[in-house]
Amino acid sequence: METIQDDKRLEQETVRKVTWRLLPFLMLCYLFAFIDRGNIGMAALQMNQDIGLSPKMFGFASSLFFIAYFIFEVPSNLALQKFGARKWLARIMVTWGLISACTAFVQGPTSLYFVRFILGAAEAGFFPGVVLYLTYWVPSAYRARIVALFMVAIPAASFVASPVSALLLQMDGIGGLRGWHWLFLLEGLPTVLLGVVCLFFLTDRPDQARWLNDAQRQWLVTTMDKEAASRTAKQHIPLWKLFSQPHVWGMALVCACASAAGSVLNVWQPQLLKSFGLTVMQTGLVNSIPYLVASVLMVWWGRHSDRTGERRWHTAIPLILIGGGLALASLANTLAPVVLLLTMVLIGAYSFKGPFWAMASTWLATGSAAAGLAGINAVSNLIGGGLMVNAYGWIKDATGSYAMALLPLVGLSVVSVVILLVLSRKSRVAATGALKEAVR
Image (cartoon, rainbow, N blue to C red; front, side, top):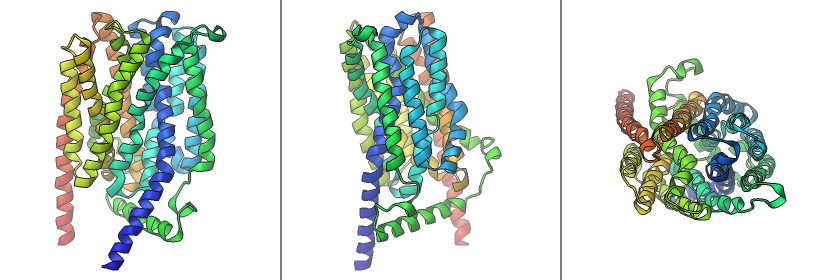
């Protein structure tokens, strides 16, 4: 009995130390990734008029980030495996920070298109790279809550950045620059510094972790090797075959719903809220409210998924929240209910992530995990960001209505729920069959 208690204590101490060592830094990095990716939404309150952007042009410019992300994400994640997380994540952060800061110097639509495209290429691979990196360090029983904690940086970025960006827009005229110039400069350069710190702070693998004692390091190496071996025991799918598998595309479509909801609101929500007659500062403050609530609830939801061991409905319910919130938001015409419903949508978009990525990582063989995770995220970003952010701009241009432009996302949420329930049922049936074969 004492040995079991000692083992459990060692496990808890090791996971706690790994969490406190890696997670705060990775969250800070991801927070700046999303600030640099999404600050175009607040900048648009000044920038669009200055450089002559229509809603359709703004939507296209915003979508180019996701198109480049799609093209370069899988190669970037494979490069992380080759060069190690420490070097590759540092490379990603330094380049995206510099490019984001350079957005301050765009002169018109064409230069903005170019900068947004290369920003997507620079950042490609960061999120799936970190998810893959965490599979080297965090046992599967803890993964949903850890991924949820890491991904709280997404809504936290908008919660922090919205009022900060609104304040930076007030610097209009200082040094001969517009407020949106200062916004891009002052929010991009800290990322470069974090990239340099990354080189000295991160450790590639548990067996290299001198900040763990011998017992902790041995327990972690043994545990993660066992989990990797169990995933390797699944049928290994060669890279060229991976994307011909229906379940990979299915997972990507499921993820696309949450990606679309988060991306569209990140880019367009400030303009939607300002259309109710708010000032720039009021828009920044109100825009932060849904993200604060989503930040808290996504962590609780991920912990609940781990505690119960349930993934299917912990992933499906957030998708239902997204669809319901968007459908009702398209009918609302006053500020308070719109903010409430957008909060509901963002709770779904971010609570989805922890359980989904924990589930998806167990559906892929070890050798296919890097390409699989990156591929799922890349396709979901292409559909959710590249297509839906564009569609929102087209519909807004054609109808003049921010609310009507939300309707395609409602249809996507319905499709996503159906696909998820079918995929998870097939996975459960396959797992049951494998268990019966093992018993025989």
